[in-house]
Amino acid sequence: MIEIADFIARCKAIDIQVTMLPPVFYTRNMTTTWTEKLYDYFQETVAPELFRLTESEVYDSVYHANHEGQKRVTNQLIQQLLEREELVE
Picture 1 (cartoon, rainbow, N blue to C red):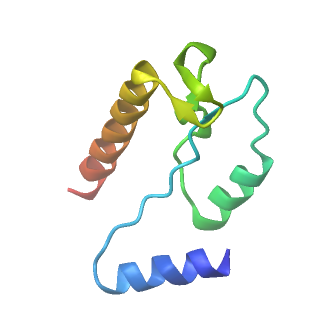
Picture 2 (picture 1 turned 180 degrees about the vertical axis):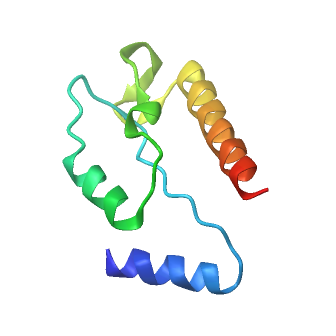
């Protein structure tokens, strides 16, 4: 986590905003302990469940989204960034 914290600090020093996002993948039972610890450490608020693929959104592996999955995840990302932008303005 130190490397990530250093990276975020360097970005903030030159006015670059960093948004940490959870990984996109499919699973029936999602354990979020590691992600929750990471998010607590960096005080992030994006829910990991927003980017979890459903079974119908999987292409050929748990990490590869089909067109519907890509579209939904991309729209979720856009929405998160727009909401973040509204908070900054």
